[in-house]
Length: 358
Image (cartoon, rainbow, N blue to C red; front, side, top):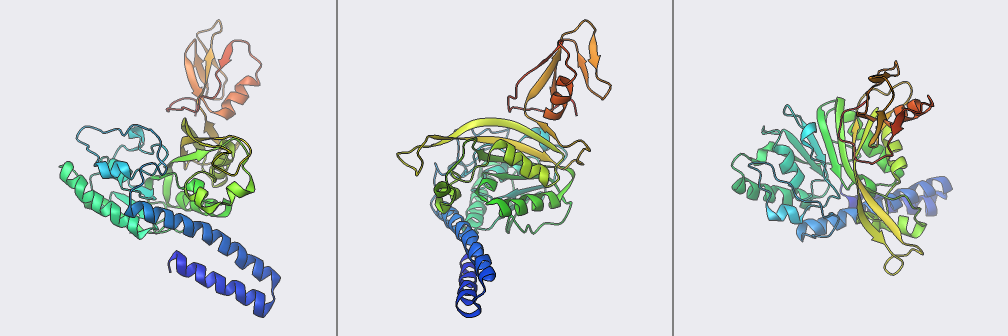
């Protein structure tokens, strides 16, 4: 059943509950279901249009399109890059990982992922929009002509829903989504994250890029289905975004980048103030949840400058003299609580690149 058919069924249920059963609770449940499906149907239609007619400025930022040795990315894939950052990081992709990418766009990041696993079905590409899957399939044929190493069957294109992934439990090393989760409303976001957690192997990584916003947005913006589909009005704060991930069970979070994304201004949008939206790149790792809470890396570091050659807190954190050590926010708070005057703590840069205390 497609989105249009589901909406029609929900409308019939709504009318039945209102006119026949006169059941207020069932009516409100049906009404809420229609509201949710309406925004998802709008999203479906936006990306159907973007598949049929590439929209260069739909979501993408001015990120450079990096190409590895022997990797050529067709122009059509670049024009259909509907992400807001990058989810492809070489350090995540060693030893032929099994990969899942949800929301395929024009196939650019699928091609980049396939560079690291050149096996049949090494990458699963999933989308709910038939036209986007077809566009990616066509684009792969162009990619084959430009890349001797690439075969279309390296990518297993599947139709599927982010909230009900047609993928086995504990089967994926690296899952990714780019500028998708910000579209989802709260309950749907929880389902989508829970599904990613389910399919990842222990210590597997969910790599993401999404818009975030530290300012409140009014209800008119939040409830505008098209603005939400365009990745403009569904943005969470970084703290709420991270909490959604840790609530799902991810024990380690890495915030790898934070960049300017968009402005919502009073002249063009229903807002009384200028709203600044950023995009972040995040990895959520399916590590066991520590007893004292998740390890969240936001690009902070500690530098010891005391009289000894090093400082050891006895809890696994050793700081060599005048050498920066990347630390998670939890460790930052614990070391600051010691009250020492010979350790410097940097502020969060939101550019964490690996290593450190945990």
